[in-house]
Length: 200
Image 1 (cartoon, rainbow, N blue to C red):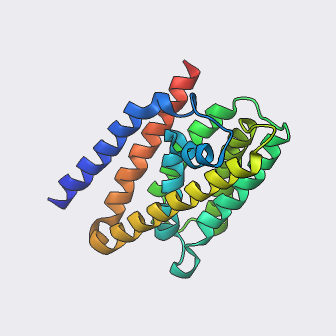
Image 2 (cartoon, rainbow, N blue to C red):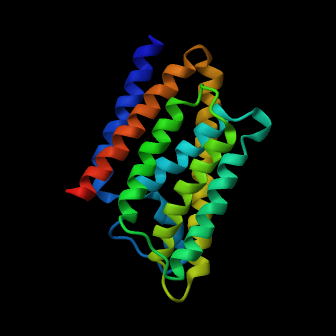
């Protein structure tokens, strides 16, 4: 019964991802605190940031679960500052989309003994890509308010992911591997779909 419920949750996550894929980035403002608060709800950012929280609780020692969100936030801010200063990378949006698939892979491997430093390095690298995308869209004036907004929402999404990870650990303890596998597969598929949309 639990197995069926887990598969349904994973399927619903995937369908939500596919339905919203076209809304990942375009059509948002970047000139105020409020627009910064709303920006991370683009599908690619939202999935990645929630995944960081789930992964941190599932893969890192209990007393170090804060390191995943902290690494993401710091690298996100650094990337945004560099992006606002004019730094960009070719195929940046495609890289952001693939980062969602990367987080799916991290969730699939969360129960394995992957070195924490390697996982945190991947989290920081993906966050830097997201930051470059944020910063590249930032206005010449008003960057501070916009940046504060997306940092606050990012932290809230990480917290949501942490709570989801704690819920998996508490209520699905015996099937946590299956739950993480389902979420990882859904994230991976969503990331590849987002990448395919950009490549089309």
